[in-house]
Image (cartoon, one colour):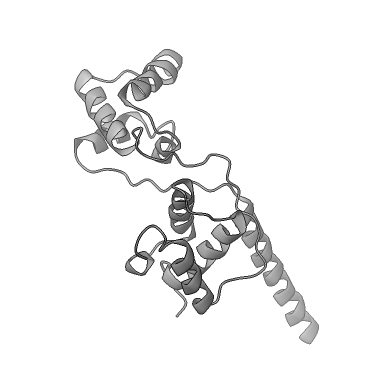
Length: 185
C-alpha cells in the first residue's frame, strides 16, 4: 500500500516537473488583446485564419512598413486582398498600436529554468530597486497569468530595465504567484 502511494506520488511529481520544465523552456509570446470596433471584424474575417494577432507585436513599423507586409506576404504570396476601407482600418490600427514608437517583442527569448525564487520581501526590494528607477510600481493594480507578466517584464527590459533572464523569470514567477489570476495568498 505504501509503495503504491509512493509510486503514484512519484509519477505525479514527475509529471508536474516535466510540465514546469516544458513551460519554462517554451518561447515567450506577447499578449495582444483583440481590439474592439470595426477593426475587430477586419482582423477576425481576414487575419486570424492564418496567424494569431500576437504576431503583430513582433514588429514596430510605420504605415509604409505595415503596407509592405500586407502587399508582400499577404497579397502576393497568399492572395489575400482587403476592401480599401478594411485595409485603411487595419493599417490605422497596426500603425497606432505597433508603430515605430512601440517596442517590438523579442523573438528569441526562451525562459530559462530557475532554481531560486523571490520571497515577498525580496521581490518588493527588487521592484523598488529595478522598476522604480523609471516609474512608480504599478504591479499591485493588476492580475495576469505568467505569460502576461512575462510579456510585460520583457517589454520593460526592451525599454531599458536592467534585468537578466534569470531575474526576469524570478520576477515572473513571483508576480504570477502573488499577482496572478489565481494568486496564492
